[in-house]
Length: 431
Ligand SMILES: Cc1cc2nc3c(=O)[nH]c(=O)nc-3n(C[C@H](O)[C@H](O)[C@H](O)COP(=O)(O)OP(=O)(O)OC[C@H]3O[C@@H](n4cnc5c(N)ncnc54)[C@H](O)[C@@H]3O)c2cc1C
Image (cartoon, rainbow, N blue to C red; front, top):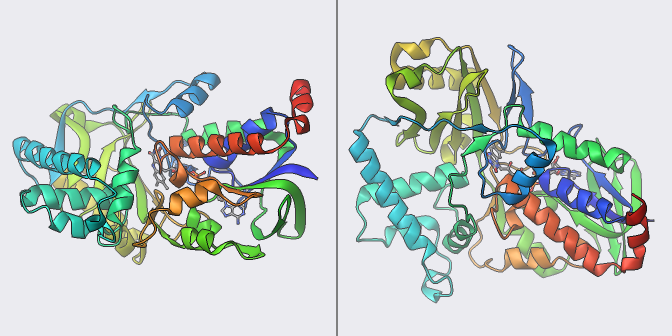
């Protein structure tokens, strides 16, 4: 019998599996797809450039990810933010700055709220914003747009108490878009996977979990595995779709049902050169209409391009339409913003994550059920022999790649604390 089965080879599952294997446990990591990385994924463009189509950016505050990158000796690229931001529709730099100050003030107010205040229970983010009567409309409207862009969900659906707590756990002092990896962060996930060797099984979607106090069986396509413990390194909505025998405790069922996946589309627009820099522009674009769109310069020394993100209701709307219409829309927006220089687009690559089969959506699941403030704690506790780990549950950087690593490593510690050390210490010494 195995010591631990881990389901899901995103950054959470890979991190948990590596820590557990390094401690000497007999593990098996099961992945539904034919690749690792989950919401970290890549594509190769017609010109041969490999790009991240999912998670990409990070900052020096993300310690686990930085250590991992440093350990592989990879060079990081710094995101280019020198120059002016472009606004769509166009406004002056001063007006843009004032808008951003208002949004930041509201975000600080949210961070400072007393989440135990009963008057806040059950409020959606839109409800809470509507009560901020002293704030100017550009601050409240900008704040709602930010929620669509960052949490990729309609603020009328997102629970305010969830958002306030979630935002407090994004603890960095540097922009989370500070850096990226020219060779893709997905290649980093592949390196983690290579260290696991045959302990990782691809194309093995788990469907059913049968458990008792001290053992668990996992049924995947055509196979059944047994272990002492199980780590479900899956977003809550995805873990909620599995069949459990016996059924999970009602509190766990409710905690898994509290979430809904974000809705995001990531677009990469490739150019021959970053021409916007010649005009004093940084490449950053803030849209106020349509809402939930954002772009930044994603060029490295060899390739020029913009990463464009669409989040929330706007992404949901584009999800239903043909990709060629979205390509035409993005081209026309960039021409409007940058002028004729933007006509020489080399390539537009679209990755639509809305209703994604294996991840649910992007950038993460969010809590949409009113009385579920304890959902995260309940999932973090799990129910022996089942543990839950995914970026959503991380105490720092939830919803980010760093959060996935934190969640995976935290669960690995919990499992190690729970199994007798005699089960693994000797094996670890021989690895
Ligand atoms: C477009 C986009 C842009 C993003 N940008 C950034 C960014 O710039 N910076 C950043 O830090 N974060 C970013 N994120 C978020 C980040 O990628 C995620 O928070 C993180 O990768 C989640 O990791 P995870 O391991 O928790 O979950 P996931 O990555 O969702 O991994 C879950 C894994 O489980 C597998 N699986 C699902 N069901 C089963 C099953 N039944 N059996 C077996 N396996 C199963 C899936 O295939 C997947 O591999 C972005 C995400 C997206 C999609």
